[in-house]
Length: 192
Image (tube, rainbow, N blue to C red):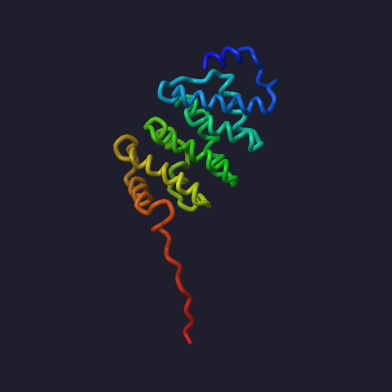
């Protein structure tokens, strides 16, 4: 990141064209992944993090998409600053935005620190255990990966309540598409 940081040290991001800012954010995502910012606890400087947050908060979906993906490998310190926004975005109707948020949550949930961070989001576990929150097959399967990752840490590391542990186990046992808590439809019969 030194080359990128040196070049942008004196730059004003407001002067960037939309396309250049988008490419810059995609580059940040690539750099945070390859340099393993999450593993080595490397924080973005405030200007870069603010640029990322501004794009996450944008009303333009095309601005949000690369910013969401760039959050996958942020340090836990930086991720704490964007996780609430990501959680709000995962509940939005746009399927591509939801998918990118889910993919970010999968990456974060694979490590204990990321899983703890996700579980501290108010309403996250309720949303996670709600099978009907995803309407398409691909997003349902991605969400299932998050549930499996949380279940790995649920008992010993996260020390989640036993009811939540049971719900996670039921969710994993049922698989991504079946919901054993749903009552089967009843057939209406007419007695004559």
